[in-house]
Amino acid sequence: MSLRRIALKDFVIVQSLDIELSEGFTALTGETGAGKSILVGAVQIALGQRTDASIIRHGAQRCDIALELDSNPEVDSWLTENGFDTHASTDGQEREPLLLRRQIDAQGRSRAWINASPATMTQLRAVGDALVDIHGQHAWQTLSSTASQRQLIDAYAGTSTNEVNAAWQTWHSSSQALEVARNRQASMAQDADRLEWQINELVKLSPAAHEWPALNEDHNRLSHAQALLDAAQVASNTLDDDTANTLALLSSAVNVLHKQVHIEPQFAPIVDVLKQAQALLEDATHSLHTYLRRADLDPNRLAQLDERVALWLSHARRLRCLPEDLPNVVQGWKDELAELTQASDLEAMQEAVNKDLRALTKACTTLSTKRQQAAKPLSQEITQAMQTLGMQGGVFETSITPLAQVQSHGLDHIEFLVAGHPGVPTRPLGKVASGGELSRIALAIAVCTSRLGKAPTLIFDEVDAGIGGQVAQTVGALMQRLGADRQVLTVTHLAQVAASAHKQLVVSKARTSDNTISQLSVASGDTRVSEIARMLGGDVHSQTSLAHAREMLQTAAKPQ
Image (cartoon, rainbow, N blue to C red; front, side, top):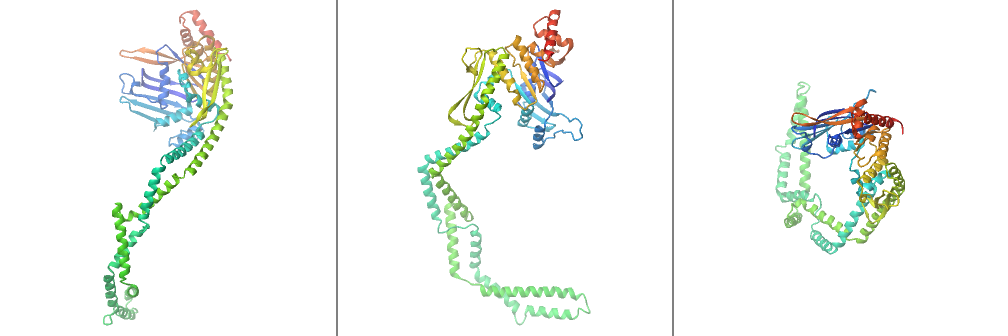
C-alpha cells in the first residue's frame, strides 16, 4: 500500500474532506458532475502539478491538500540525500507515514512541504513519480505522440536514452565546432596573424609573471643608491668612532656591572640585556660593513633598469592596462592563438567528429537492438489484452524503422500501429477514428505496462470511457487483478467496474445556503447495492434493479 489518506480543504467544490484509503482495488463513483475526478486532480496537484488560484473554493482565501503515503527504501534514501526527515522507525514500531502538503492562496502563490519541511515542486514530483502512477481518461492523447511511444517501448525494454543522449551531445558539439571552423577559416587566419603580430610586438619586453614588483624595487634602490651609501657609512662610523665607540662603551658597562653581580643580584638581568644589545650591535655593524663593501652606484645598471621600466610603461599605456597585468595579457593572446591553431586543424577536428560518431552509432545500435527485442512481446501482450476488451481480432504492432539522421534519442522511428478489427490494415494509433477504441487501446496499454513502474499506487481516471457490457466486466476483473499486488484507485461510471472493487467510495453534491459542496462517503452493504443499481441505470427502489446489483457484486467478488 502507498496512499493512505487524502485531506482537502476549500478545494474546488470540496469544503472539507478527509478520507482514508485501503489497499487493493478502490472504485470512486458518483453522479456526473459530483466531482469524482476532483480527487484525482487534488492528488496530482499535491504531487507537484502546476495550478493556480482557480482551484480555491468560492469564498475561501486558500486551499490545502495533504497526502499521507507509505514510503519505501528508495524514497527514504532520496529524502535523506535531500535533507528531509524520513520518519523511519528505529524501535521496531510502525513508522509514521510520509506527509506531502501543498497550499495555494488567493494570489496564486504556492507553498509545499515534505514531512513538515519546505519543498519545491520538483521535489514533490520526484517523490510522486516513485509512489503514484496516474493514468488519465485522455491517456490515448499522450500515447499518440511519438515521444510517449518511444518512452513506453524503452520502459518495456528496461533501457533508457541516457547513454545515447550523452553520446549525441558530444558528437553534436564536435560537429558544430568543425562547421564553425570551416566557415571561419579566412577570419581565423586573420585573427591568428593579428595575435602573432601582437605577441611579437612584446617579444623584446617578454614580461615575466611577478617581474614588475621586483623591477620596481631594484630601480628604486639604484635610484637612491648614493643616499643609501651615505646613510650606511654614517651609521657605521657612529658605531666604530674611536672617541665614542658605542660597542666599547657598552662592553665597559657590561664588565663593570658583571663584577658587582655577586653583591647585587639585581644587576644580573641588566647585564644579560646589555650583552644582548652588544651582540645585536655587533651584528648590525657587521651587516653595515658588508653592505658598504658590496654596494655599488652602477650607473650602467640604473640606465638598463630605466630603459626596461620605460618599456613596461609604454606597452601598458598602449594596451590600456596596468603594467602588472602585461604578463596576463600576453598569456591570453598565446592561449587564444593556440585555440585558433587547434581550430584550424580541420583534419584533426574531422577525426574527432568521426570518433564521436562511431561512439554514438555504437550506443544507438545497442539501444535499437533492445527496442527490437522488446517490440514483439509488447505487441503480443497488448494484442491479447485487446481481445478481452471487446476488440476480438484486433492487432497491435510496434513499428521500428530507421531514421534518416541520428537523433538524441537514437536511430529509431517508433510508431504504434493498430487494427481494431480483423481484416483491417493497421494504422497509426493517433489516426484510429473511434474514441471508444482509443480508450480501450489506452486501457490495454495501461494494464500491460502498469507493472513496469515501481509506483505501488495506480490511479485510473475514467480510462474505461466508451465501453460497457462484457468488456466493462473484463475491465473490472483486470483492475481487481491489479489490486491483488498494488493499490489501485479508479474513477469510473461503470457498474461492472465498480462492482469488482474491493472498496467503493461515492462522491455526491450537496446544496448549502449559498454554495454547492462535494462530499465523499464509503459505500458498503445496502448503500453500495443502491449505488450499483443507480449506475446500472435502474430505479434504486426497484427490487429488480437491486437484485441485479446484488448479483453483480456477488459475481465480481468471486475469483476470476
